[in-house]
Length: 557
Image (cartoon, rainbow, N blue to C red):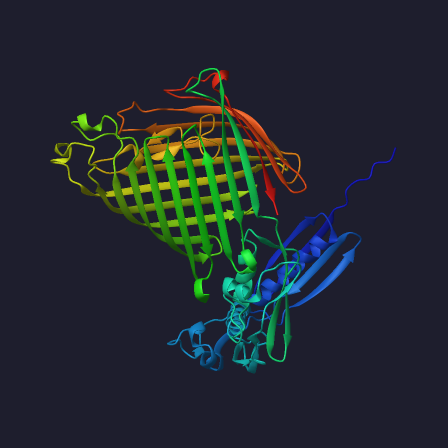
C-alpha cells in the first residue's frame, strides 16, 4: 500500500540594501507562495523602493529569492491643483494645492480611488487619474496629478426586465433616481440595496447599466412575488357562557400590496374573538406621496367589546425611509370610546372601570429591519418602537350621577410607549430560532378598561382567547424553534412567558405562560397553518380542557 505525502513548497529569501533580512517560509501550494512574493514586492513599492531588483532560482519545490532594494525614493511635491479645481470638497477647500510631505505609492492609490469615486458620483463614470510631469532629483520625486473627466453621463429611464408590474415612474421615486440628473454610482448601489429590501418584488439577477449617447440606462430584472394574501382562521375554544359547548371564533385578513405597480397597499382585518366581541381594522398606504420621499398612511379601527364599550379610532401618519433598513414615522390619532351598557350606573359613587372619553394624540416611531427576506425571514433582526402623547378628555355620561365627576380632572395628559424586537437566529440549514420581545405601557391619572392594551391570541400570547388580557403595562417573550422541511414550510414548538399588569381592575400582577406546537405547510397557492396551544395564568388553568386550536389557510396571489 502506497501513501501519498503532502508536498511542502519552501521559500528561502534574502534581502540586501537599505533593508537587510533573511529567512524562510513553508507553503501548501505554489500559488500561495507566489502570492506571498507579490505582496512582498508591493510592500517595497509602497515604501518607495521603485528600483529594487530581484532574482529567482527554483530547485524542485523550493524557491530561492534574492532582493536588492536599491535606494528609497521620496515624494517632495505632488501638485493636486487640477483635481482641487474640479472637486474641491474631496481634498478640502483650504487644502494646500501642493502636497510636500512624504507620499507613498499606497497613499497615491488611495487618493486616486477617492477622486475617481467623487467623479463617478458627479456624472463622470469614465474619468481617469494619473501622474503627469514626473521629475526626479536624486532620490526625490515630484509630479502633477492630472485628471481626464471623460464624457458627462446623465440618468435615463429605468427599464424593467421581467414580469414585474412596477411602473418606471414609481421606481424612479422609490430609488431616488431622476431622469436627466447626473449619473452617480453611489445612487446605483443604493438603488440595488433598496430593491433587496422591498417585500413585493425580487431581483432575479444582477442589474445592468448601459451607456449610450451620454445617458445611463439601468436595467432591473424584477419579478413580482405572490405576496397579496387572503387569510381565514377558525378558532375552536371552550364556550365560557355555555358550559360543555364549543365556541367558534374567526379571523379574516385581506392584504394587497403595490396595487397597480404604484406603491399602494391596502389591508383589512376582521376578528370575532368571543360571542359578542368583534374587531374591524382598515389600513391604506401610499408610498412616495406626490413624488416626495414621504409615505402616507390612513387607518381606521372599530372594536366592540361584548356589551360593554365601543372604540373607534382614526389614524393619519407619514413616514420617511432614512435608508434601506430604517424608517422614521410621524402620526396622529383620534380615538372615541363610549359605554354600551348603562344599566345600574345611576347608583355609582366613583368612576366606573369603563368610561366615555375622547383621546387625540401624536406620536413618533422608528422601524429597523435587517433580515435576509422581508417575506419570510430566517436570519436577521427587526425592531419597531413608538411613543405617543396627547390630551384625553373624559365625557360625562348622563346615566352616571354628576357628583361622580366632581373633583376629577376631565382633561389630562396621556402617553403610551410600545415596542417589539424580533430576532431570527439560524442554526444550521434547517433550523431557525425565532425570538420576540414585546413591551408596552400607558400612563394617565384616570385610566379606563377601554384605554388598556389588548393581548392574547395567535399573534401575541398564544394559549389564550384573542384579546383575553387587559394590561396597562406588559412585557412578554415568544420563543419558537422552527424546523424547515421546505423553503417556507416548517414544524415548530413554542413557549411564551410574560408579565401583565392591570391597575384599573386592581388585579394582581399576572405572569402568564404558554406552550404548544404547530406547523405551516406551503401549497401551490398559499399556506396551511395549524397551532395547538396550552396557556396558564391567574384566571386560566394550564389544562387540556382549556387548550386552544387555531387553524386556517392563507391564500397568496
